Image (cartoon, rainbow, N blue to C red; front, side):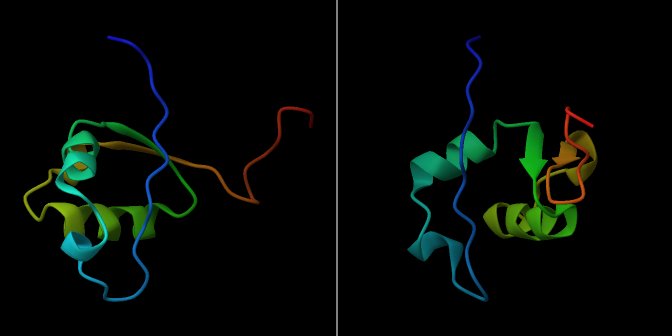
Amino acid sequence: MDAALYLLPVTLGDTAIDSVLPTYNKNIILNITHFLVEDVRSARRFLKKVDRELDMDSLTFYPLNKHTPSCNS
């Protein structure tokens, strides 16, 4: 399988997922198991909006934000 980096749009507030995220994107999201995220909690909330049945324990989250040490340190 080829490696790919997907940039996923996240909804703001209580916006319904179906109004901003096409089915094609949802299907891609459901096949991803490793996520680079700014905030793990927000990412989990977003993924639960995409699919309430998604098993969060089977996913891996890597925080990447201003607190992440740089490689040059």
